[in-house]
Image (cartoon, rainbow, N blue to C red; front, side, top):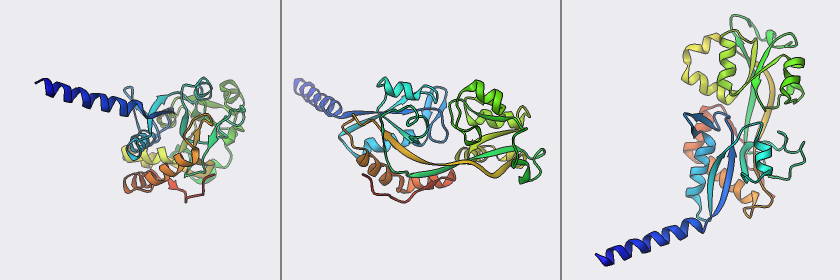
Length: 261
């Protein structure tokens, strides 16, 4: 019996040392389907799956999810609450604030499109002039149509924008005729219509794009993990069948490999 206890203790110590020998990489994430979705306090989505797969791929680093918000993410990073953020762009407030953070080459492409009730927007011409129309968007997001302004008061007064917490709420505002149009990522719209096929005939999707963006990985220059190494790992995982199929299912484009610095 004593030998069994000793063996169990040895295994425990070995496992304990193995876990704590790893360097922690805290990955910031905010509600941004299909990359991060929060349901009943639990997170899921591409970022969660990437973290899971990164921890399986290698043994030197332990990746851990840290939840933040679009508004708070820059401040949380500067306060050291997380080290990296995925599916991001350095021009989403990072460069403008002079924040030091390394970024990878782009690895995925997504678009933001406008939607409207099909009964109101009979053709694509409806989306050509949106100056007299109300628009729903996400608090903390940057939109080309609003000159990348994020101040809620300016967006409300100058651009007639209603700000909500997620894309689903934006779509519901359109369907309930509480706003004329909404800006939604193409990837989320794919996901929404897969889950709600009965709404496909009620929603007109614009050919007009507010902006196309190329997702990158952002990582603190103070962290010992090199951004080029992280980029290569993520590319390797995204080219695997499971994640590649998920990308295609949501209308995302996986960009070709670009040599990392």
